Image (cartoon, rainbow, N blue to C red):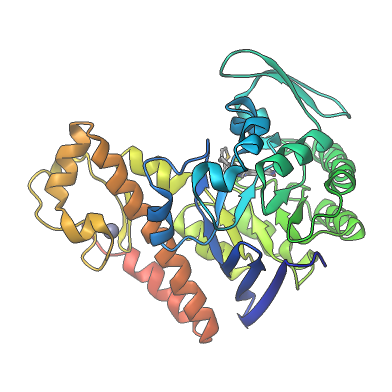
Length: 373
Ligand SMILES: O=c1[nH]cnc2c(CCNCC3CCCCC3)c3[nH]c(NCc4cccs4)nc3cc12
Ligand SMILES: [Zn+2]
């Protein structure tokens, strides 16, 4: 076990778990939702505001930061925590997933991926070794192994070959990561929706040994039913005493279903990105503030929400500033959505600790069935 990094399980309720991940930069209450700080910022939010929403940890984005301003510059500035003034834990992704979805002229080989920057067309290479170096330069507390996530739909042969490549890259990530007390390296399980391939991947990762284990290869278009069917068996293949991180999830009901199946950590751009498009998450479901029906509505977004948007502003105002494309619109809607996602996590942590997760889940779904929100 990497010293300075530990995971304490406090309670379980069915497959749902609640606990704390301890790191030298602070504790992470699980189940945890991790806001995405793409290019060194959680868009439209000050770091202290992100903290106020209840987030214990944020994500940093290796792909964006390696291109601009470069990991070497951030290292010379004292690392990402100092650079962006976020002094809690940071998890950085390996860059691999973003390369495959954002970069141009990508070339994938056993060695890694070469690509051209979507910003200025410059040529770059990402390998397990380079990804570990970049994440070290950023000063990341939780480092993700360099993996390949196959785009679905893909046939079983392609999924098996991709998973086996990711397992070879997982070993190279582990070897290159070295021994960094207080810093953790997470492996990523692949294998699509196939039970035997997921098993082979889990066994390979456990043989290498990681401080935490991610369930990758999901939330890539398979749909919620297939994702939950896979989560009915995949997390159980991973060590019970280490954190389990489901990558890229998700909508509130995806998050609840994942926690119910034993997931401890999740990340998603949804609350921040959709906030900027006017999509608002409330306990009664989703609304879009640009809809004309909010034009003269004096009510807050959510009567029972204590965030600054709900304490100080009406839907009519938020409708106006959204339509006028005012900067405060992105600020208030992002704050509200991040606050809502953190409230969701806090509600589940308490429910699991008190052995009433099933009742909490039933109420979560019932609230959303109400009519006009
Ligand atoms: O197997 C995977 N390996 C590695 N990363 C994955 C990610 C990216 C997780 N968020 C990274 C963040 C780093 C900081 C910037 C923002 C992303 C996934 N995201 C999704 N679904 C959501 C999706 C998002 C886009 C297309 S699908 N499935 C994923 C599967 C994997
Ligand atoms: Zn609110």
